[in-house]
Amino acid sequence: MSETILLAGTRKGLFIGRSDATRADWAWDAPAFPMEEVYAVAADPREDDPLVLVGSTHVVFGPAVYRSADGGRSFDLSDPSPVRFPDDLGASVERVWQLCPSPAEPDVVWAGTQPSALFCSTDRGRTFELVRSLWDHPHRPEWAAGFGGQAIHTIVPHPSDPDIVTVAMSTGGVYRSEDGGASWTPHNHGIRADFVPGEPPEFGQCVHKVAVDAGDPDRLYAQNHGGVFRSDDAGETWQAIDEGLPADFGFPIVAHPHRPGTIYVFPLTADVKRFPPDGKPAVWRSDDAGQTWHETGPGLPSEAWTVVLRDAFTTDRSDPVGLYLGTRHGALWVSNDEGGTWAEVRTGLPDVCTVRATSI
Image (cartoon, rainbow, N blue to C red; front, side):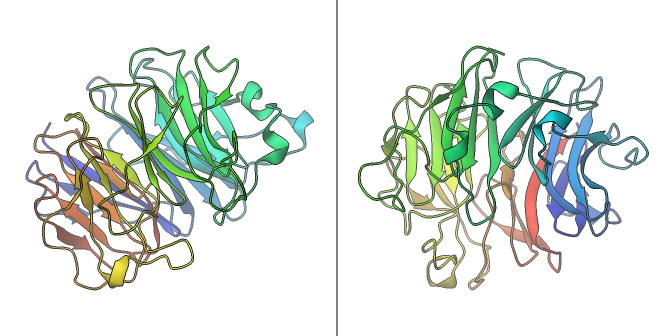
């Protein structure tokens, strides 16, 4: 693989950077999908058929998914893949929040939307069908909107068992299916819900993001609306792992793709003060599944009163792994040495909503 591709979805289009394996110098394509909200991007770099998927929302035509087979150099704008509810539901998709190719089934792509709904494609994103079992879940009337809306923003398919998939939503929490999506069970025991009086409920948590450990598919990590958590039993129970962090609030949590127990977060002061502590952005890393934490290396600005959203932090799969951050003030920060050092590779973009990286 000779080209590293960085895909940054913003509120005014998709920006694509390209570099060689060093990930030191970047060249940038002309913006794609100008003036469209791009909240979801996925890359599935299979050597025989590389695929980039973009979920964009047009002010007139609404949300759709577009495909590229050449690393994002071109998209067939004449053939979008609509993500729509059946007519009998009387509901409309406001935005595609998540696109996730299944690692266990080469033709399956999952999509999460606002309002909270899960869609599945069995033809690599050409068509999508609503997963009715989750839409018809008896908990649905009690799922509420978070500050950013009421949406499924996390989809974690099991790496080898296609019957198992975990989703997270704000608000609603974590749900898991072990029968191919026929039924869904809340998996939130131990996750706080500080905005609800009394003991944490069975569901209704505002989980911001979930990631899966590189070595154990039953070990999950969650950045919550207050608290960072780990589950060692596929989400049945969770325990807090935020001791040692400068703050327990944040949006993304990222797992190292090759090294078990290694995770990264971007702490923010609080839900009503969504800045890095003291205005100093920093990525924090744990190499022991959250037992201890340390701040990663230099290179980030000494002051930036900004936010990194839940899907605006990602990794590639190279060795050493590259880390990529996009901010609400339109900057892109890259580490090509797993957080040892950082560099700002782009500024002046619109609000960055999602970042994905791949190699072809």
